[in-house]
Length: 201
Image 1 (cartoon, rainbow, N blue to C red):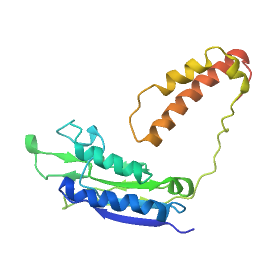
Image 2 (tube, rainbow, N blue to C red; image 1 turned 180 degrees about the vertical axis):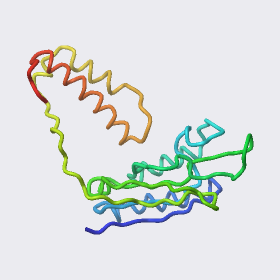
Image 3 (cartoon, one colour; image 1 turned 60 degrees about the vertical axis):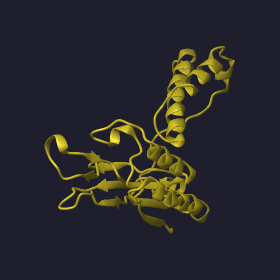
């Protein structure tokens, strides 16, 4: 199996990073059929909890998230340090951010989904080194979810589906739809058990 890894550095200026975002979107077709990872220092955060001193959502963050969506990428599971950059100061002047990250495309998560990003201690640098840890894929031990036709006979079913789809979740579009379907799955199981208490789905 071939995998592709791109290493990136985002410029400090928001407008200068636009070229990087364009480059990522142009790479989608090139790597669409292969596992593709992108990692490095993007010099911008994605979410408001990735800055130790500010919760403000900026235009630069919107640009970044839009670029990730267009490039069909998503964050890998990470372990280690949450903040990957520090201004190396202490006390009230200390600022930390998550500027470095590892992303993967759909094929990456399908083929090497048990991999994860390790964010190591800074050491003498102001950024955390990143490594991707690869593991043998573990066999799936759960039961696949089955759609039961009788759910559609329940007068509340469509209203329940609409209510769940209208819920607000944080994350990329891929993460959001995953969270919504997971929520709906639990409710549907409850409806099934109400009708057939001994049913296992």
